[in-house]
Image (cartoon, rainbow, N blue to C red; front, side, top):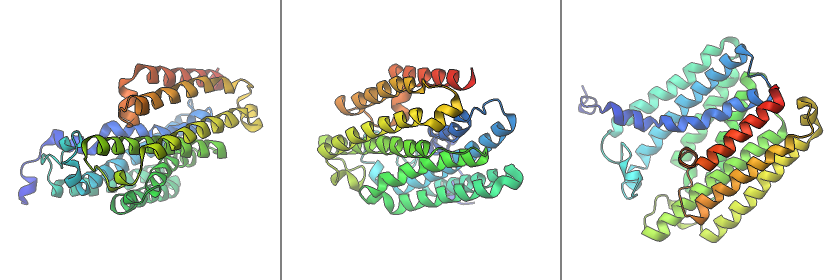
Length: 300
């Protein structure tokens, strides 16, 4: 037996999979929610299969990313505690886990029966795009964040296709803009770490500048809000939901965006959306209020 497999730390192996990041796959459920199909058990089964496929796929990507970034992570004050960088999980085990999760993600697609080819294709594109990102794209300025944003779009498209939900072009654009905004916020965190501690967490940290990133985040925040307003005011959406007051939900979108900017920019905090959402009550309140208000418009 390979010595690397004799002593496996189960807790560290689970952390390598980053299950907390599975929350991002909630984007898969967006089409079903907006289409008013939350009460459709068949749609739920299909959507949950897609969520499971993306959870496994994202874990495979995180394993690959942590192995390739282990040397750089060891220099980071927080990332040095990651399983591979800290030596708790060997690269051999990491690659084995990555392969296993990739196979499981593609295998999940078979649970859809005759409808599996589309989800299989989308999941395969997701894995391929992320593999290219880990190996090459993450070193290319601008292209790196575009690749990250496209992964969110693929989640939404997967949710729409598995539930046979027509996706409004504005929803696709909104998802892309929001993902760009979050990705640039994370890049800003890398630049702040580089400027304050001299630690290069990724090569692009030396190419981006704080003024450019701050301007970019401001532009994307405004564009995201405008796109959201156009979505809520578009005749097709008003007709589908039967309400002219969907635009009122933009209050929570604006409040949440400004709060995120405050935490990520003004306070020079983490730009990680999951970390901020889990610890900031105001962001949680904005998200919950937005969901409740939209739920009332669609289902009541």
